[in-house]
Length: 416
Image (cartoon, rainbow, N blue to C red):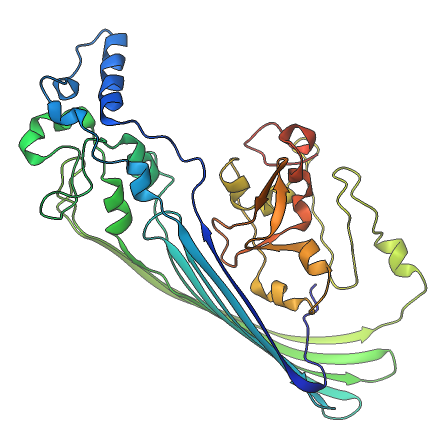
């Protein structure tokens, strides 16, 4: 459970946080030049006892020996990141409010990929009497993103950048996407297989997928006795989304297609809850210390730093270790592991901490924060987080070299 912050009585306070940075790919595959590419094919044929194809023969196809494109350089980019958050809070003797406006924009490390998020939060509470309070909490998030297929071993953008002929340029003389060979050398096309121009895979699709979420709660709270409170609340969670993907025809040599494709869908969902609670709150000396001890985890040494506001827990198997740290590891270790999922904290959690609360940095990492990963210093960046935030608390086992706390099987990103 998270107890979010409210405004305090007094003059309105304004807080602005702004961050800009750049993310880029690290240690991308090294591309072969045209001569090395053709030589690799000739070597493979010789090793198999086959006759090398004419397309890779320098005498029969000299065009294939000139490097015109480094396809890795063409598909990757340095993506700028912008994160801004404006907070206002204040109140009077009987009323309090806190509101925030958030903006996050991230260009992907692959061309024509991006993510943009607008968020708004308003929380207020008013004391009608000394015993009766009313309040509300509203969150509005609107996001749009454009991704690309990178997982397919056949039509993925990255794998095609490895397959694609380095002798081919990105565009032909007319400004159209170039294929594996020019049309006048189409007799050699079969030697290069069904390969897509990887830049076309990134730039051709027109993808729109806006998401809107409205989460709101209104409540009334009455103190019946000193430690006995009745609370009635009504909450709703609304979602609306649209997915539209248009891919135009691809006439160039490689894997040509003369058809246009349009995939479109939309949906919405709603959920509401009317909740009645009768709460009795009584503190007993040292009870919390007995129930939630702040001793370090016996396996990883991570301090628990439990408080009355939040508690983390996980259930894992003895055979595969603790699962939760691996799920919270950003993008499965930025591509180092074969993960089964990921978990990103929300902006609401980020905004829930009071200003100056030391637990914020201990619990969360944001863009640009310094940390140690597998024994090496680095700065945090996100490859797939919608909020640009990561749970820092469970990064502890990954600060050490891999052999110290981690499962050697890369298919299970688990810790001891």
